[in-house]
Image (cartoon, rainbow, N blue to C red; front, side):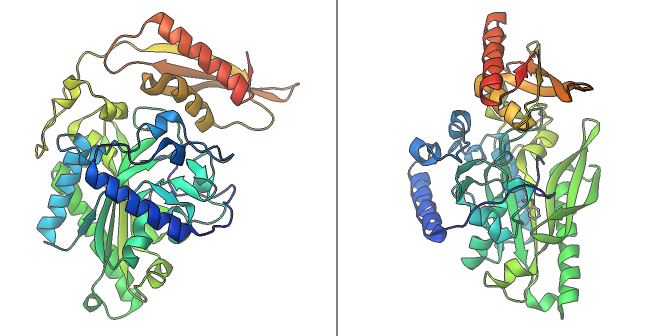
Length: 410
Ligand code: PHE
């Protein structure tokens, strides 16, 4: 998964005030609005696009909040969610609570601190996460709800929702996607001491997720376990699935860190947790080649999927030709990140951008300056683009790169 919570570096986030109260207000408000109109925008523009200097949420991202793809019955994201629900209901009837309308605006405390993300972890960097202000973010993973849900007394639960990450652009990365978090606290009768509990948790976790993969894809699916690092689990693993000639990471998981259990009402207990990417699973299951398709309202896409039908394979309709534009520039001394470049491109092109790839990089030996050349592929999912339209977008991209990112265009 993009910029997953797996490596360490970079800046922390400042002290938190009054956060639990704010979070509670937001949660209640979010829930009430969802109950009234599940498909309506659930936050106001002012709440998300604040003038706080730390705010890095874009109009495009704001427009996605409240879309609730995971709650539209005939949408592939919802179909896969229901299939996972069916798996858990069959395996352990009535055990897992299902939460799917928790608000995506959360405190940095819930998103990071409560799941033990270190102060210098890369995921806290505003280059990776959308901040509303220093204390409030668009959740970057459904793990943001682990602690609060344990505190509410749930001991086995599935939390599904939209998550937000600043990222690079290609066919399997999009700044909004959907995750399902699963947490299961073991029954005390399953183990006699902590060491045994951890072993049982790991075993049950792997068995459960392998069975889930077989339930979704059939027993022939090629899967592999990869050792991983997450701040909130130990040991940690990723499950990868072979798709379109490459290994695709579809979930992260592990034995929950004891501290999270201890301070949230489960002292001395043992648990496992996983977080899976619903788009990734749906791409594999339905052979959907581009992650942007989940957001299209083109009926040639939407009509292909029906609630409860897991065996549909996406039939590509005529693909419109891509249009490539290169942009070269000297990197600014103050620093440069590809995520910021991609954010600028998306800001002007929206879903018309298919990929942004670094095709050349060199450092001038005398000037000690580095130049990058990126190839931007523009392609619409549902219409052909005119040269004029693309030229306009590219001009705007170039202007913003110089203006906002302070690069020197070549
Ligand atoms: N939150 C992790 C991610 O988004 C996934 C995860 C969830 C890993 C729960 C372990 C346990 O990448």
